[in-house]
Length: 262
Image (cartoon, rainbow, N blue to C red; front, side, top):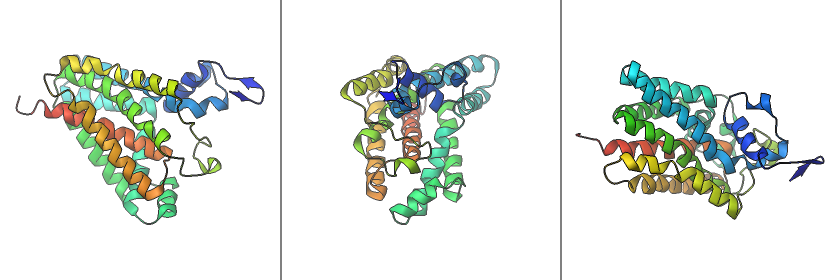
């Protein structure tokens, strides 16, 4: 790929993903060419290794010096600080847009509005309650492995929206002025490895029904895909962020359900 005569290098797209999906100052070290940002979704799960790893470490080591509930809240706060609540903002906009109803243009207009509405506020509160309580109900080691696995896995699953749907807006109307390119076969294989590899750790500590951790979140993604396709006939960045968080939450609820009554 080239932009104004500048060739992109093999590490440009992964680095762009870290710059784009986190608030850590990677851009101070190196700023990749703008063209690289079209491929950031192909390395979205890789950023999940970072955010999920930080969250897992906070859960595990925090539980050694803090009450478990405080460690859970601290872990959630750590991820919000790293990502700048990027995906939570997308979830709020998604809920406002689709909750507000109306036609395609009305939904897109609501999602682009920077103000948060009733559906967004209530949705974020309910989401955070489910997130915190589901992690709290897990054993410490299971919760740590769950967040390290679920973060990149949900990003891998949600990235399929880019392959399955066109972008719902024009490129100049996009919030970041960039439309993600559709992953190639090689990029798809890379996404699969990035998203599934951490799952092996989670499966190693789960007692049973590990397959539900894959199947049920994938079904949630599919039904959200059908909703998005029906309502706006394409994806937006907010849609990707919302699907990511809801798929991830489904993983936690499935894992949590294995420990009910234990």
